[in-house]
Image (tube, rainbow, N blue to C red; front, side, top):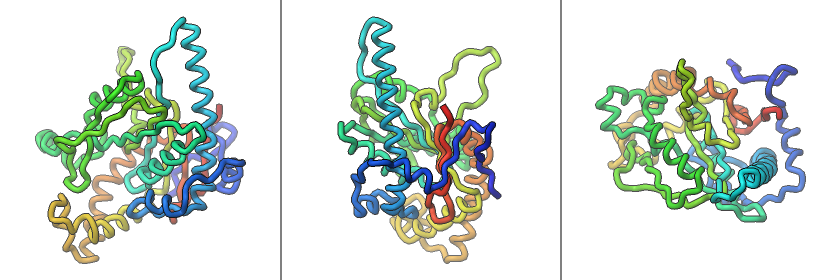
Length: 318
């Protein structure tokens, strides 16, 4: 079922077909090679050079205007306040379902932005590192709701984003191990005053329910200057998830150290049945209850078709 938002006179979005959006690239140069794009692609998301040229280069051009305008506004605000504080990064949020290709999109966009003529420092923060540890999830009885809003240490994520946005140096964030399916107890990633930060995760646009007393509660999205939601029909997302599960069975699940090593010896029929069960009982529930409802909060929506190609772009009206 197609549940995506459609543009109309009353819609907050302007709609572009793939062809219309591609023309907005104008003279933006291609700075990635076909080999680099292949290396940036995910295990089940192979992005073509045409996709980069027609979708991500126009987006890079648009973001260059937004970043420049935001920096100019910041300078004027500091002048009005009578002083200048440290460097403030431009933060881009990227949300969407499991298996929709967020990580691949974030990696490609990061590389494109870093190759602007002024060579900005672009970092990527994934919210997987802010999941509660498996021990905590087990203790709270929510191991089967991993990826749901309650499975994240949101206060820690907010502190990290606040420090980065404030221009602090050497801000550390936890790292998630997909091999061990848990937050690493020792590994961290450090952020040192990036010019642009991409924050990628399933629930980054989530806001929850404001308190009745009107007290201010910060949300992750409060730190975003621009946000992207990657969208696709639920049936297509399920097929992508199952396809990815098959590929992981032949690769990562074969590692004896993998949390999911027990799935490495499943038959094709058992693999499909297991993947569909996980999708239907966990990921689809999370998509319908928590992820998809945040779609309308994004500044830009990339709607994908069955082959992972973006077919329609919705840009919030100014």
